Image 1 (cartoon, rainbow, N blue to C red):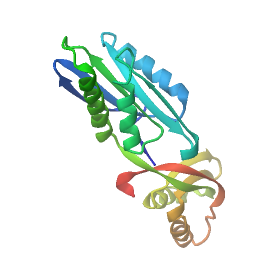
Image 2: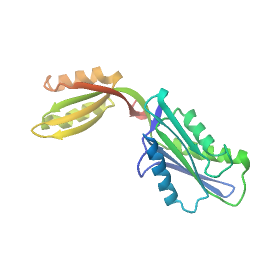
Image 3: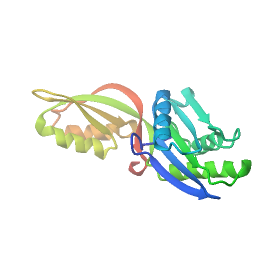
Image 4: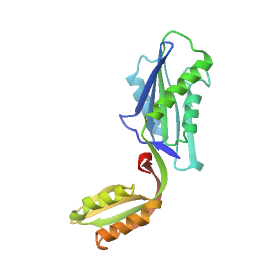
Length: 215
């Protein structure tokens, strides 16, 4: 499974025109259903003169626990939301929302034309998004000295992991998420670099997004 990393105020965006109608595709990373409504509200505020803002979304914490939602937003049934959803499924995406905003140009496109237009806008926005693969990862916590902090961050990054500082006190409490396929090599590098003075403790597991370019 894959997801996109574009989120917040900076979704991936692509647009094109078809018979004077303007179609704007936006691709967002989401993790819960509530984010869909928030983003749609934001899009309607940004595009008050748009005729339609259709969308499709897929999210869930596993393949067996996925949810889907889509809307034609006033276009003929099956001509907007379904083509967008098809694009998400074809790209094997999860935790992703794609909206397509249409400014009507005065020329009717017909059902076939609408399906092609919404599919094209969705596909273009996915193409420019930063993709990541969801891979099994192990979660670690560890205690570091301040002198060890930056080196440990670099080591975790070298093995496609993520690093987060949880607390600063007389030492640093940190959390690292390491792909399962990389954890043994990462643990060995940490032991060798710090002469076994840093001992990461396993605290759980999860699927995490690793940028495709890093895999």
